Amino acid sequence: MPVLKRHGEELAWVLKDKINSRSAVVAVVGLGYVGLPMAVEQARAGFPVVGIDRDEKKVEQVNSGHSYIRDVPGEVLQTLVKGGRLRAHHSFDPLGGADVVIICVPTPLKSMKQPDLSFVISAAGEVAGRIRPGQLISLESTTFPGTTQEIVLPILQSGGYTAGEDFFLVFSPERVDPGNKCYTAPDISKVVGGVTPVCLDVACAFYRQSIKKVVPVSSPAVAEMTKIFENTYRAVNIALVNEFMLLCDRMGLDIWEVVEAAATKPFGIHTFYPGPGVGGHCIPVDPFYLAWRARDYGFHTRFIDLAGEINAQAPEYVVQKLIGLLNRQKKCLNGAKILVLGVAYKKDVDDVRESPATKIVGLLLKNGAAVSYYDPYVPVFRLSQKEAHCLESVPLSAEEVAGADCVLILTDHSCVDYQWVVEHAGLILDARNATRAVRRGREKITRI
Ligand SMILES: NC(=O)c1ccc[n+]([C@@H]2O[C@H](COP(=O)([O-])OP(=O)(O)OC[C@H]3O[C@@H](n4cnc5c(N)ncnc54)[C@H](O)[C@@H]3O)[C@@H](O)[C@H]2O)c1
Figure 1: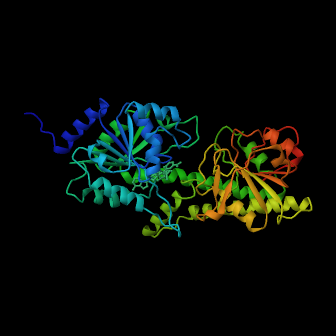
Figure 2 (figure 1 turned 60 degrees about the vertical axis):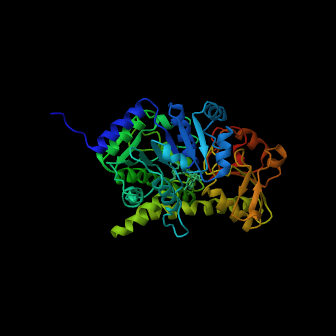
Figure 3 (figure 1 turned 180 degrees about the vertical axis):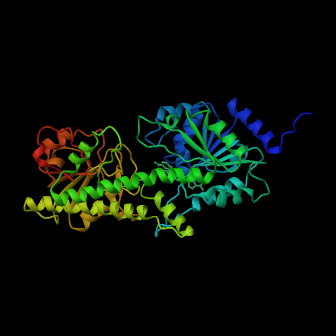
């Protein structure tokens, strides 16, 4: 007697066939730092891709082959758009024709550090309104354990379809590291948790087309927790080294020398470096998604709170260090000319979200300093939502560097010639050890 397949398994077979033949249409919702590279990666893997974003400007830019994400080369985007492999839309209607829907919308914090899931809920609602049998839906936005099962699933099932039977739902965290040239999307293993075993099976079949290693886990909540664990691990270890930075300063020791010496141990240590604070859409945000969720279980995530507290002290420490340096020159911060090098939250990216530079430049201005900045990737730096708080990047000229009472390095972009900067500067405070290779003029440099 032939074994009859269940409805969900039949739909899974059909979708896997489409995936294997690369005829499945992939829709990416949210074309930001994560979504645009993902859309490009899928199109390069051979899938027809539609990108959907609420921001009409981004849609226009994609369709004219203009990349606004540094990790996506314009030529690659142009080739895919011209070849009809990728098309962006402002309307959500193309979702109806998609076989695979990947959701990459923001998951920021509200003012009191509570999760703001409004983007996820709104995107899930748009998908639910157009859902059809046989679709795979993957949430990739970072969020707390339980979101896929408790929030997204009911929205998608509200029209009467059932996950695992009529459509397939998984959570698979995006783990890309913007600006990282060594590990790009295909090299970063993909963790996937399905709402049912069939959901997991279909999603693994899909991700294996473009990613070298797929790691199935037992549930969406495990996949959600995995991503937050990774980012909390970074937040806590950065806080640890930042706390050592504060203590080393009191004890007259050089934290960089300590960290570099410790890094020579061939086992048992993974090196994290001190800095002016944490930034970006992940490290300062994601752990607090978990801290908030943990409260439902009567649990206080002490490491997360402590790491947040210590990392938040780093910008003020940088300003205090700068005040001390100026003092030794018999100068005060009020009226001092400070040239900030780099305002992006980390090297070689243009992202200023949660950048410690926002806090530091704000404190410098508040204390009467005349601040200018140079960042090759950030032409305009918005200190607040108010238009009046915008600064424009100045050219990195010898006059600009020599005219500053202190050059403050906040981001160690690789394209800057730090030896040249040191030669022209009078005084440098280096918050990133960007000047580590500088040989001449080291007496002008102080590291945090
Ligand atoms: N940036 C990173 O380095 C990184 C790395 C890994 C994971 N993540 C996670 O990925 C998610 C996305 O982050 P990002 O940095 O790409 O954000 P982003 O702000 O750069 O991009 C999000 C995009 O989604 C669009 N959008 C918002 N709501 C929408 C909706 N309802 N429908 C369609 N489009 C909508 C926005 O216009 C924007 O273009 C977040 O959860 C983040 O935590 C980010």
